[in-house]
Length: 292
Image (tube, rainbow, N blue to C red; front, side, top):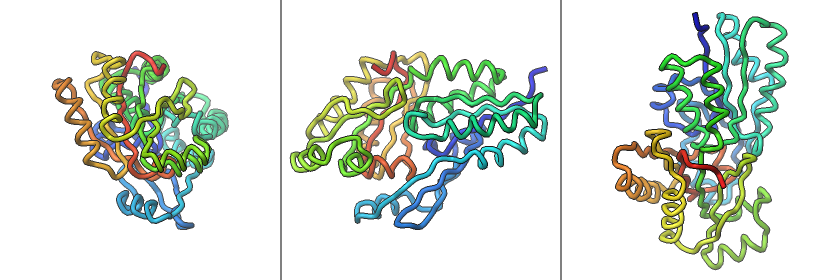
């Protein structure tokens, strides 16, 4: 008989509470600091209202994040292993965080203590609701009766098909993170030029285009989406936003008109991701041909 297992992931998935519960995912909280005060982002919500978080960023507040430590993984995995169940952890991209490496350290320790248990960690090389989309599909597979090895293999096979289309509004956050130069940030803000980004094959955030104005952002999103989208891979598409709901709603409607049989779900970008991308960020996440 197939052994029971639990799918763990981290709070960077930015999935709504109802989808986390529907897929029966265990979400490990992540911490962030806002002007030196610490908060936690969990699978069922955040200790700080996300709108309040982005309003604070608009007023110049500084946010910082930290990766999950090996000790936290041990704390969350141990009760499951003690109960005789296996663990599958689906990690935030190693190209953006050391969290995956922390999980590997914890697993090496736990495997000695629980040699008969399967403890698997997969680097999704995805971020935000792109990671969330892949994890959500994995959770559904588990509920359909797929084994831990089948689900882990699915994630490994399909992770390069998860496409992240990204636009940001405030270039200063990317400047602080070293994604663009100070000169580019200053010039871009002055000319209303917005960079388009993606998460690449190495799980890193890279600039792909620079456009001016919301209409051109919409057109760029839709053009790339139509080129890449694989409708048979998933019935779900995510549009994720950082306190710019109207932009997300418009994108949702445009996608829904083209693919009425798919569910286009609006999600919020939580503070852990938002600390690095800033307010006004918009993401379109879907299964596509590749990340090129």
